[in-house]
Image (cartoon, rainbow over all chains, first blue to last red; front, side, top):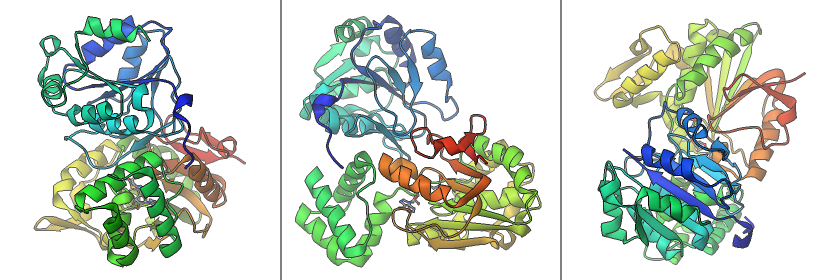
Length: 192
Length: 269
Ligand SMILES: C[S@@+](CC[C@H](N)C(=O)[O-])C[C@H]1O[C@@H](n2cnc3c(N)ncnc32)[C@H](O)[C@@H]1O
C-alpha cells in the first residue's frame, strides 16, 4: 500500500448527474477542447440495462477517447471515462479506479457522493467536482468533503437545470465554489 | 476520523492476531468500508475501535462481514448466464464428470443459479459445485438455501432474461416471507471456507467462477489469485469473472481466449 505521490497524478474532473443531466453532459463534452490536460469522469444515475449506449452516444460528440470503466483502469489525461451502471466508482492512490458493488447510497449506485469522497482522498486540490441536474440529494455531502480536501466544487445554475433539486440541495447545504450555466462550465473547463 | 495510519494498524492486528491478510485489498474500498463501520458502530475513538477488534472474536466476524461486501443476486447479469447456457454448458456436457468452483460465493445465490442451469440441461447429477468464501456467516446462509420472498420477483425476471423457460417458482417453496430451495437443487453443492489470499488450490476444475471478488483486491493480489485459478484449471476449461472485471491487466492473460463480449475465458491448449 505504497502511496504514490500526488504529484504523479493528473488533474481529475468528475461530473455527477441524475435526471435531466444527459443533455448538459452531451453539450459539455462536445464543446471540450481536445487539448484538455485532465481526465473527465462521468458518474450518472441510470438504469442497469443502458450499459454501452451512453459511451456510444458520447463518442459521436467528441474526438476525445471515451471509455466505459473496467476495474483497475488507469486514468489518462485527455480521456473521458464513464462509470458503469450498478457499481460504485472508487479512486486508488496509484491513479487507477476500482469498482464496488456495496449497498446503494442515496438510493443510487453509482453514488455521486461515494465517488466525490473517494476521489478527494487521493486527488485533494487536483480534483474538480461538478454537480448537474437531478431530483435527488446525492452529491451535496460529497461537496463538503471535496472542499475540505482542497478541491473545487461547481453546481449547475439551478435555473438552467431540467431538475433543479440536486444542484439546489448542494448550493443550500454545501455552498459550492461556483454556480455556473452550462456555457460557463464549458468555458471554465476549457481553461485547463 | 479514520486515517490511513489507523487502517495500517488494524491490518497489522488482523494479520498477527487472526491470520487474515487484508493488506492487498483495494485501499479505496478499505478506507470507505472501515470508515463506514466506525461510524455505524459509534465508536468514541480509534483506540476503542482497535481494542474491540483485537479482543472480541464476535466483533472480528462483524468486521469481516462489513469490510468484505456480500451483496449478490440470483442470475445477476442475465446475459452472462445466457452465455453459460448456450456456449459453455453444452461443452461441459461432453465430460464424464463436471467440477465447478464458485470462489467468493457469498450467500450462494450464484451457486443456486448455476445448479438450476445444470439441472435444466440434465447435467446436475454428474456435477459437483464447490462453493467457497472467506466469511463463514454467508456460507451458513448459502447452506440453508433460504432466501427472502421479496427478492423472488427480481430473480424470476433475471431467470427468464437468462433464457429460462420453466416456472421459476417451481424451484422453491415459500413460507411467510422466506423461500426454501428444493433439495434436488442443492444436493450437489459443497460449501467450505477458503481464503483466496492465503489458501492453496484444492482440486482441478472445468469451470471457475469468481465474480465481483477481484474488484476488492489490488492488482498484485488479483494477479496472485488469477495464478491460483490458472493452476486449478485444465486446458480448455473456463474462467468466469464479474461484468467489469478483466484478465487484461494480468500475467495469465495470454493463456486464455475470451468468449465474445462476456466475461468468460477459455484456457488455451
Ligand atoms: C460481492 S460478493 C460476490 C458474490 C457473487 N460472486 C456475485 O458476483 O454476486 C464478494 C464475496 O467475496 C468474498 N471474499 C472477499 N475476500 C475474500 C477472500 N480473501 N477469499 C474468499 N472470499 C473472499 C466476500 O466474503 C463476499 O462474499
